[in-house]
Length: 208
Image (cartoon, rainbow, N blue to C red):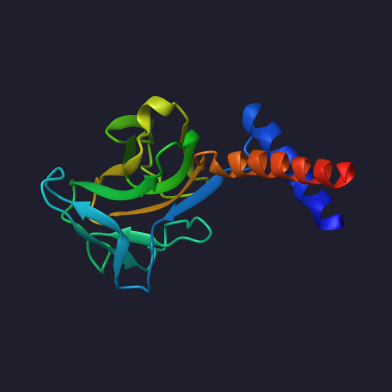
């Protein structure tokens, strides 16, 4: 009986939260730079040096001594040394999948870049680091950008692009992105159906 009460309370809270814009049923996806040991290819992050015509795996690097690091991440670059050609623009790309019927999407990203980063979701720019006097977008605190307009999300594959402009030979990116969304409310509907069935079962017992 106690288990039944717990299930009923959870379902009622889930239904209330969903229809009042809450996020009790929200799913979370975390994306980071630096998936793997130093010197290895990062399977979750690609880079392009030709504007997105071709891509290859980014490389996990040991952070330059001047770099700060977002907890739980590692720096990535176009080479194991963390050096590029200088005065180049690198397009880093990762992706995530949203299921059909999702709602209330929200994406937040914090990042460091050597030297300047522009952040885009499915081609829409929602973040731009300033070019500071000492070009220190690679030190703490990291830049923070967010987007929650549903018009810029889509069911299926979503592309998160970070375009990094490098002004010298060291080049790299460090980021952590957190996506939250409410999946199709099948769980809520199951709760509603379950509650109705439970009510009928209890009523049937009482009328016997």
